[in-house]
Length: 142
Image (cartoon, rainbow, N blue to C red; front, side):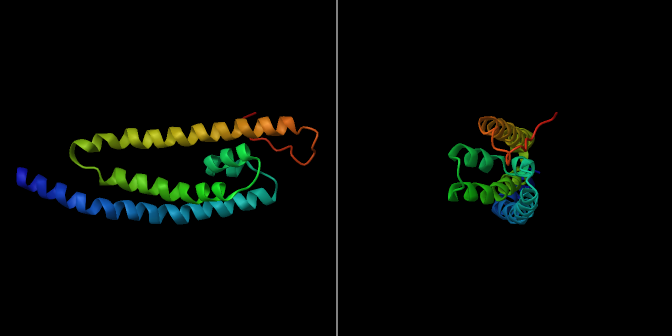
């Protein structure tokens, strides 16, 4: 019985890299889809989609007050990173399996915290530029 468990653990460790790569490969097209969705929403002047799906790059963009290569890199790396983390969680076995739910909850908490921070930052900037009629788009639960 113990030997079978060890074989299963070794097999899982060998496949851990494959699961992480699979997660990254699934996350990349998903991120690209969300990017296209955010671009179409931005065309109609709705930035809330970008704040929901790419909060880290929105916070960075609004902090720098200009578009930069850093924001693009953060946006393009976000979902492959999420996929890699999910692949790693899927590769956990034995006693480490109990870490799966806390890791995923932490990922969700970080994402929603960044969404709320992006919303705060966007509201700060739009309130500073309240005289500008072209920026009246807020993302809020009102």
